[in-house]
Image 1: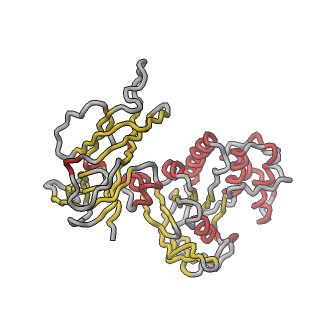
Image 2: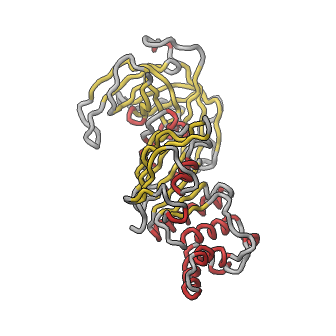
Image 3: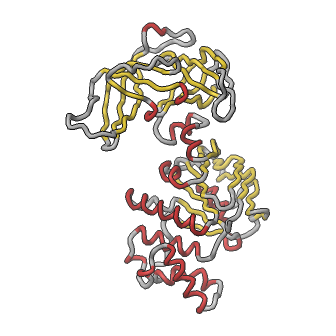
Length: 393
């Protein structure tokens, strides 16, 4: 691997009285495509700027491999940054923009030309060398910025929301290209984005941030399927999130596929009723927890599912809003708590709750959709498809 391990230890930063980063600890592996993901103002760009050397932390250490880089200026850190606004020189050609870092280092002219050609080929801009930036599309400008950042052969490439100025289709195309470039050169990429789809698509691992804290670090699969907090569950994709009280806990006979002991937990959710969920976390009766289930995990049908399995959650409701999106339809289903499941642990509020369910369209139907507005429907999901995301204090 050509990249560096990056260690961030107890990094804190304030601007005046505003605390931006709260003792951040991260280990980013050599050659990894690592994303810092979170909403605007969560501290991810400040953390990237500290890694780059454009900001200094109030406390903490940043190390590339075994070297503390905080005393070093940005140009001595073996890292380069790709900015959101490209930061190209408008009066220079594409060739000269890419060659600029080598000219600053006084590399001989005969060495510069083959190097620039190599990196223009890497970003598929061989035929645009003599154009000026104002003659390029947004995607082409971003490729020039990437080539210029890579030509110095950094061990760490820092990318600060590099695709946010592009339209949706071009952004997706550039994301694939960026991933391919990473695979070709093998250095460490640290990628800042607020777009969950971008992070899930290309990252080896993701750190989800909010309000200056890292809430969870994991693979895209781990972050999506096993969120550690209610915020992560809501921020990564769509979800149904409820607070409930643990009514009962039963240890299951068989461990899960990883060998962990599993428990069948019954939750009393005031707005919904009794919900079953399996978990490896130990919870006790009477505790208040947050429970989540993704819309695509929920089966929606106009007929009652035939399954007699004891681990299936089943509710009835009425379609309040169907949203057709071509390959799928999202349904907002109004569900009322069944009268027979009167709450024993918490008062049940009056009214109904909306549950989101997604139905994929795998077959063409010339009769139109089989579930429509105001239809009475059944919602069902397995206890294994729900998740307890946090225990309330």
